[in-house]
Image (cartoon, rainbow, N blue to C red; front, side, top):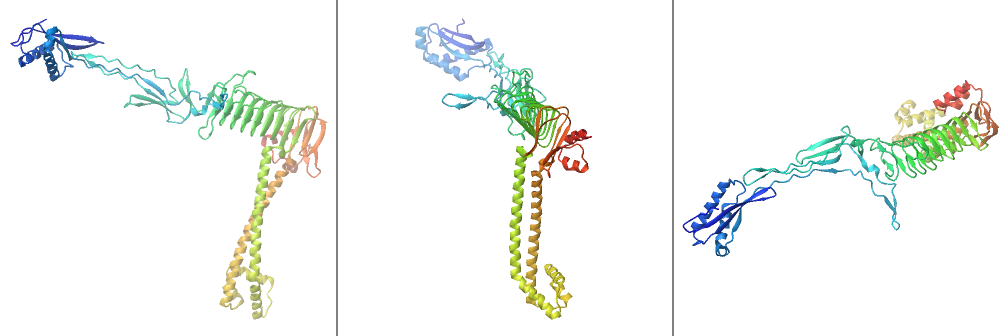
Length: 595
């Protein structure tokens, strides 16, 4: 260790230490006298120590992180101030000289999901017992719209390098990067935000967000589910206008497996279930296709419906196509096509049973086609639109329209009659006197035709023309009276036209009502191929006793005789009267049968 001699320092030890901490080097100065300093307050002493420190800095090539000069001077002064104690104990006085600029570790990356794909908690149905209903888990909350942010990826930062006391870089530790998730580039697109170092994944289309092991994140306009049970809850797209979406449920067609578990519900514009639907489930939409079995007490409500088999369920729609209907099922619709029906009730505008009806009841508004009918007298084919809920609703609406139109007509007609009586009371005597005055002046008797012609002219306000044609002078008072009479006549004619128009509207609605009330008289029942058993044919309240059918029969109803009879030959008038309300498919079936 070098010693430095100065005029005021006998012997002095000054040492520079390099302290290595966590890979970073720090420089410290240590000072200790061997004997004594004559006068610690002598400026030469301070200057000598500072010069020695500078020599050490140059010697070790320290270029960064040095303390400021006034800080070093202050530390040396502190040493000299405590010099008597240091001299007595012969200890070193140490203070920091230089330190590095530590590196800044990079920030770790992160992924934030803005759309919650987790199941919602079930609804507590009993606060005391804690019973929970898991049916409503909010699946439809995953509906997102085009351009909506889905995921924010915050990228890891490299960190900031440091500088050691020798002015060499200290490499920073980068942040831990996150694995960029997979996503479907056809339905999701990235948006880079340079300012924040983020990538935002946004929806390219409107639909439902999913996370799949193979595909990562993707959006589908359809709701996709392996099954509908307590893991998913009900799936209901409450507003069809939001998105023209379908619910697609894949499943197992095994009779023991339900793709839609008992009690759950689906609601969307289109619903496709590849499998079975459990008891008490509800399926509602415009287009519904179920490949498997719909179990007891389930409800299927839609427009176009196709089902493999219905067992004791309720189906309501417009166009319905079902393979088999069994065990007290109820089918209600407009155009119904069934292969086989057993022990069930069918209600429709037109019903086609292509293979067999066994021990069941079929009620139609205008047409029934049944290829084979077997069973007991409990089996009934009935033309009775009044038994159809949809028809009854339409009939009630039509009745209300007819009644409303009648009330409007009668109310306006009453106003017309009052105005007419008022008109007659006010003007009839004056007009009679006017005619009498003309007859006296002209020495003639006016005929009804002449009076009518004068009244027509008065109605159009042509009083001057009356005076000219009759060569008859009309004084101002009479002219005023005739103008008032003409105005009153005009109002009456407008009222009469309104009454007539309302009357025609009432007659139209009444005729429509009468046609609806007699709709069953134009119904047809067609049974073809060999049939057996006792089947009852009914047209509303009129029934044909059970008989054995062993030939093709086309039944119709004779309104005048109130009888049911088979129709084998018919002309154009009969064809037009009976078949005008049939669909093209029903017409083709009947024409093929009768040809």
